[in-house]
Length: 265
Image (cartoon, rainbow, N blue to C red; front, side, top):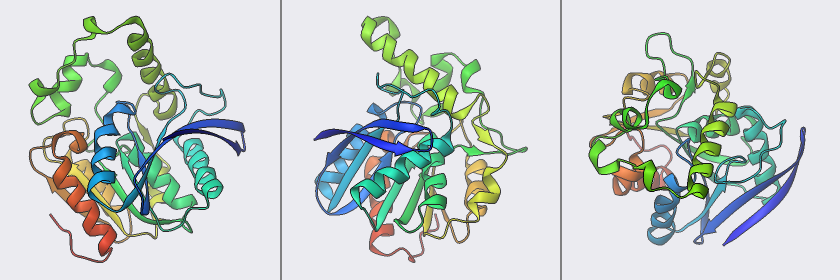
């Protein structure tokens, strides 16, 4: 089921399209720069195998959706999703975010702690690191992005020449929205101090083969969040929900069942 909500925010009314699957405990699943298609299969898996009500919003500007001019930062997106949780009156929410979706999830956990019960950050960006900076995505060719994003790059090659004009327009819109929200560096110097305000049990999951943001960067991320657990997934890169979805779902299920369980990996 797909619903478009118009949410009041500090920068005006904002339309957000949300796809909903399954029934049970609420999960807000936030996609990364690869767009909403990068979490579609995983959302289906979660809803079919677990007692979860999975909500997957499309960040405005992605997937051909409109983006208000003043909606131009990750913190602004976090405000939008805080309003969404308020509008739906959701509590005990597990927020799961991939890449920039992880960045949004972290900001949302800071500002909506009363509604967010658990946080899962999957190869998240946003943290400024002098020793392990995020790769310069916007300087890379598509093949180079694939090379550093997957444990098995050849299984995930994309041939843009096969895209229709409509698909090419959406891809260009996704790229523009990504740069607007995250900036060229995909990092915010002010994020680390804010991460100390996350009180929900947090699991930081990282693909062992991620070259976009390395596992060392992921460990820095986990260290910045009080009580967070870091877990490394073998046979996965920047998008474990595509390469090792079953293993990722198992980790999320354990967190939901027992937030205090030892998940070191």
